[in-house]
Image: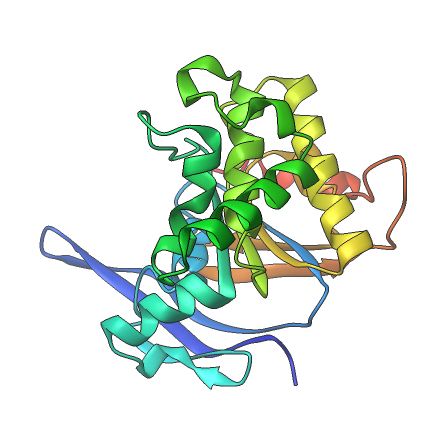
Length: 248
Protein backbone atom coordinates (compact mmCIF):
# COMPACT_ATOMS: atom_id res chain seq x y z
CA UNK A 1 0.00 0.00 0.00
CA UNK A 2 1.36 3.40 -1.00
CA UNK A 3 1.83 6.01 1.71
CA UNK A 4 0.00 8.64 -0.37
CA UNK A 5 -2.72 7.76 -2.87
CA UNK A 6 -4.97 10.13 -4.78
CA UNK A 7 -7.78 9.21 -7.14
CA UNK A 8 -9.51 11.72 -9.43
CA UNK A 9 -8.46 14.45 -7.00
CA UNK A 10 -9.90 17.87 -7.86
CA UNK A 11 -9.95 21.27 -6.21
CA UNK A 12 -11.67 24.38 -7.55
CA UNK A 13 -12.05 28.03 -6.61
CA UNK A 14 -13.98 31.02 -7.90
CA UNK A 15 -12.27 33.79 -9.86
CA UNK A 16 -15.11 36.24 -10.24
CA UNK A 17 -17.79 34.43 -12.19
CA UNK A 18 -15.36 31.79 -13.46
CA UNK A 19 -14.79 28.42 -11.83
CA UNK A 20 -11.10 27.50 -11.88
CA UNK A 21 -9.88 23.94 -11.41
CA UNK A 22 -6.51 24.41 -9.68
CA UNK A 23 -6.17 20.62 -9.38
CA UNK A 24 -8.01 18.71 -12.06
CA UNK A 25 -8.19 14.93 -11.75
CA UNK A 26 -4.93 13.77 -10.17
CA UNK A 27 -4.22 10.04 -9.84
CA UNK A 28 -0.94 9.48 -7.99
CA UNK A 29 0.73 7.03 -5.65
CA UNK A 30 3.78 7.94 -3.57
CA UNK A 31 5.58 5.14 -1.78
CA UNK A 32 7.22 5.28 1.62
CA UNK A 33 10.75 6.61 1.41
CA UNK A 34 10.33 8.46 -1.90
CA UNK A 35 11.75 11.95 -2.43
CA UNK A 36 9.36 13.64 -4.85
CA UNK A 37 9.65 17.12 -6.37
CA UNK A 38 6.54 18.70 -7.85
CA UNK A 39 7.24 21.42 -10.38
CA UNK A 40 5.65 23.34 -13.21
CA UNK A 41 4.90 26.88 -14.40
CA UNK A 42 3.29 29.46 -12.13
CA UNK A 43 -0.41 28.71 -11.77
CA UNK A 44 0.00 25.05 -12.69
CA UNK A 45 -1.60 23.80 -9.45
CA UNK A 46 1.52 22.46 -7.75
CA UNK A 47 1.15 24.49 -4.54
CA UNK A 48 -2.57 23.72 -4.31
CA UNK A 49 -1.72 20.04 -4.62
CA UNK A 50 0.79 20.34 -1.77
CA UNK A 51 -1.83 22.08 0.41
CA UNK A 52 -4.24 19.24 -0.28
CA UNK A 53 -1.56 16.70 0.67
CA UNK A 54 -0.92 18.69 3.85
CA UNK A 55 -4.61 18.70 4.81
CA UNK A 56 -4.52 22.51 4.65
CA UNK A 57 -7.28 22.45 2.01
CA UNK A 58 -10.03 19.95 1.25
CA UNK A 59 -10.65 18.45 -2.19
CA UNK A 60 -13.71 19.49 -4.14
CA UNK A 61 -14.02 15.87 -5.26
CA UNK A 62 -12.02 12.66 -5.46
CA UNK A 63 -10.11 10.94 -2.68
CA UNK A 64 -6.82 11.31 -0.85
CA UNK A 65 -5.54 8.49 1.32
CA UNK A 66 -2.64 9.03 3.70
CA UNK A 67 -1.24 5.90 5.36
CA UNK A 68 -4.44 4.07 4.41
CA UNK A 69 -6.79 6.73 5.84
CA UNK A 70 -9.11 8.63 3.48
CA UNK A 71 -8.33 12.05 4.92
CA UNK A 72 -10.43 13.79 2.27
CA UNK A 73 -13.49 12.78 4.29
CA UNK A 74 -12.29 13.88 7.73
CA UNK A 75 -13.63 16.85 9.68
CA UNK A 76 -11.58 19.79 10.97
CA UNK A 77 -10.45 18.34 14.32
CA UNK A 78 -9.45 15.02 12.79
CA UNK A 79 -7.50 16.82 10.05
CA UNK A 80 -5.67 18.90 12.68
CA UNK A 81 -4.63 15.70 14.46
CA UNK A 82 -3.37 14.22 11.18
CA UNK A 83 -1.34 17.36 10.44
CA UNK A 84 0.21 17.31 13.90
CA UNK A 85 1.07 13.61 14.12
CA UNK A 86 1.78 12.49 10.55
CA UNK A 87 2.97 15.59 8.65
CA UNK A 88 5.82 18.07 8.93
CA UNK A 89 5.80 21.41 7.10
CA UNK A 90 8.59 23.64 5.79
CA UNK A 91 7.68 26.92 4.07
CA UNK A 92 9.54 29.50 2.01
CA UNK A 93 9.00 32.22 4.64
CA UNK A 94 10.13 29.98 7.55
CA UNK A 95 7.02 30.90 9.63
CA UNK A 96 8.95 31.16 12.88
CA UNK A 97 7.46 33.07 15.82
CA UNK A 98 9.52 36.24 16.22
CA UNK A 99 9.45 36.51 20.01
CA UNK A 100 10.34 32.87 20.63
CA UNK A 101 13.80 31.34 20.72
CA UNK A 102 14.77 28.60 18.30
CA UNK A 103 14.17 26.03 21.05
CA UNK A 104 10.72 27.43 21.80
CA UNK A 105 9.80 27.52 18.10
CA UNK A 106 10.68 23.86 17.68
CA UNK A 107 8.51 22.98 20.69
CA UNK A 108 5.34 24.48 19.16
CA UNK A 109 4.03 21.27 17.48
CA UNK A 110 4.51 19.42 20.78
CA UNK A 111 2.28 21.91 22.62
CA UNK A 112 -0.69 20.65 20.63
CA UNK A 113 0.06 17.14 21.88
CA UNK A 114 -0.05 18.42 25.47
CA UNK A 115 3.41 17.03 26.10
CA UNK A 116 4.89 17.95 29.48
CA UNK A 117 7.53 20.66 29.52
CA UNK A 118 10.61 18.57 30.29
CA UNK A 119 9.94 15.99 27.57
CA UNK A 120 9.00 18.77 25.16
CA UNK A 121 12.32 20.56 25.70
CA UNK A 122 14.31 17.33 25.42
CA UNK A 123 12.72 16.43 22.10
CA UNK A 124 13.16 19.95 20.75
CA UNK A 125 16.82 20.02 21.75
CA UNK A 126 17.42 16.66 20.09
CA UNK A 127 15.80 17.92 16.90
CA UNK A 128 17.95 21.08 16.92
CA UNK A 129 21.07 19.02 17.62
CA UNK A 130 20.33 16.82 14.62
CA UNK A 131 20.39 19.93 12.41
CA UNK A 132 23.63 21.25 13.93
CA UNK A 133 21.89 24.02 15.85
CA UNK A 134 22.85 23.18 19.44
CA UNK A 135 24.59 26.51 20.01
CA UNK A 136 21.75 28.57 18.53
CA UNK A 137 18.89 27.23 20.68
CA UNK A 138 18.47 30.43 22.69
CA UNK A 139 18.49 32.83 19.72
CA UNK A 140 15.37 34.46 18.32
CA UNK A 141 14.77 34.44 14.54
CA UNK A 142 16.05 38.02 14.20
CA UNK A 143 19.46 36.82 15.37
CA UNK A 144 19.63 33.96 12.88
CA UNK A 145 20.61 34.00 9.21
CA UNK A 146 18.09 32.90 6.58
CA UNK A 147 19.70 29.49 6.31
CA UNK A 148 19.72 29.07 10.09
CA UNK A 149 16.05 30.03 10.27
CA UNK A 150 15.18 27.44 7.66
CA UNK A 151 17.13 24.78 9.56
CA UNK A 152 15.16 25.68 12.70
CA UNK A 153 11.98 25.33 10.63
CA UNK A 154 13.14 21.88 9.48
CA UNK A 155 13.90 20.90 13.08
CA UNK A 156 10.37 21.99 14.03
CA UNK A 157 8.91 19.97 11.14
CA UNK A 158 10.79 16.85 12.30
CA UNK A 159 10.15 17.09 16.04
CA UNK A 160 6.99 14.96 15.86
CA UNK A 161 8.71 12.29 13.74
CA UNK A 162 6.32 12.74 10.78
CA UNK A 163 5.54 10.21 8.09
CA UNK A 164 5.87 12.87 5.38
CA UNK A 165 7.86 16.10 5.16
CA UNK A 166 6.08 18.66 2.97
CA UNK A 167 8.11 21.60 1.69
CA UNK A 168 6.74 24.56 -0.27
CA UNK A 169 9.53 26.41 -2.11
CA UNK A 170 11.87 25.86 0.88
CA UNK A 171 14.84 27.58 -0.80
CA UNK A 172 12.93 30.50 -2.32
CA UNK A 173 14.21 33.03 0.23
CA UNK A 174 17.81 31.76 0.27
CA UNK A 175 20.91 32.36 -1.81
CA UNK A 176 22.46 29.60 -3.91
CA UNK A 177 24.92 28.43 -1.26
CA UNK A 178 22.29 28.18 1.47
CA UNK A 179 19.83 26.57 -0.95
CA UNK A 180 22.29 23.78 -1.64
CA UNK A 181 22.88 23.31 2.09
CA UNK A 182 19.16 22.99 2.78
CA UNK A 183 18.64 20.58 -0.10
CA UNK A 184 21.57 18.47 1.07
CA UNK A 185 19.80 18.20 4.45
CA UNK A 186 16.63 17.02 2.73
CA UNK A 187 18.50 14.45 0.69
CA UNK A 188 20.30 13.15 3.78
CA UNK A 189 17.00 12.83 5.64
CA UNK A 190 15.61 10.85 2.73
CA UNK A 191 18.61 8.64 2.01
CA UNK A 192 19.78 7.97 5.57
CA UNK A 193 16.54 8.18 7.55
CA UNK A 194 14.14 6.95 4.87
CA UNK A 195 11.91 10.00 5.33
CA UNK A 196 9.27 10.52 2.64
CA UNK A 197 9.59 14.03 1.21
CA UNK A 198 7.17 15.90 -1.06
CA UNK A 199 8.60 19.20 -2.24
CA UNK A 200 7.21 21.95 -4.48
CA UNK A 201 9.67 24.10 -6.39
CA UNK A 202 10.00 26.06 -9.61
CA UNK A 203 13.79 25.75 -9.56
CA UNK A 204 15.39 23.10 -11.75
CA UNK A 205 18.46 22.73 -9.54
CA UNK A 206 16.32 22.18 -6.45
CA UNK A 207 14.08 19.61 -8.14
CA UNK A 208 17.18 17.72 -9.25
CA UNK A 209 17.83 16.58 -5.68
CA UNK A 210 14.72 14.39 -5.81
CA UNK A 211 14.54 10.87 -7.16
CA UNK A 212 11.19 11.54 -8.79
CA UNK A 213 9.98 14.68 -10.57
CA UNK A 214 6.29 15.29 -11.25
CA UNK A 215 5.45 18.16 -13.58
CA UNK A 216 2.10 19.95 -13.38
CA UNK A 217 0.40 22.09 -15.98
CA UNK A 218 -3.14 23.49 -15.81
CA UNK A 219 -3.90 21.44 -12.71
CA UNK A 220 -2.88 18.13 -14.29
CA UNK A 221 0.16 15.88 -14.26
CA UNK A 222 1.90 16.08 -17.63
CA UNK A 223 5.09 14.23 -16.71
CA UNK A 224 6.10 11.82 -13.95
CA UNK A 225 9.66 10.47 -14.08
CA UNK A 226 11.97 8.66 -11.69
CA UNK A 227 15.75 9.02 -11.65
CA UNK A 228 18.50 6.88 -10.16
CA UNK A 229 19.60 8.18 -6.78
CA UNK A 230 23.11 9.59 -6.67
CA UNK A 231 25.39 10.91 -3.96
CA UNK A 232 27.46 14.07 -4.08
CA UNK A 233 25.50 15.64 -6.94
CA UNK A 234 21.79 16.10 -7.69
CA UNK A 235 20.21 13.15 -9.47
CA UNK A 236 18.88 14.91 -12.55
CA UNK A 237 16.90 16.32 -14.23
CA UNK A 238 16.93 15.74 -17.99
CA UNK A 239 17.53 18.57 -20.43
CA UNK A 240 13.86 18.76 -21.40
CA UNK A 241 12.86 19.59 -17.82
CA UNK A 242 14.58 22.98 -17.85
CA UNK A 243 12.61 23.87 -20.99
CA UNK A 244 9.33 23.20 -19.16
CA UNK A 245 10.10 25.98 -16.70
CA UNK A 246 9.80 28.59 -19.44
CA UNK A 247 6.35 27.62 -20.59
CA UNK A 248 3.77 30.42 -20.53
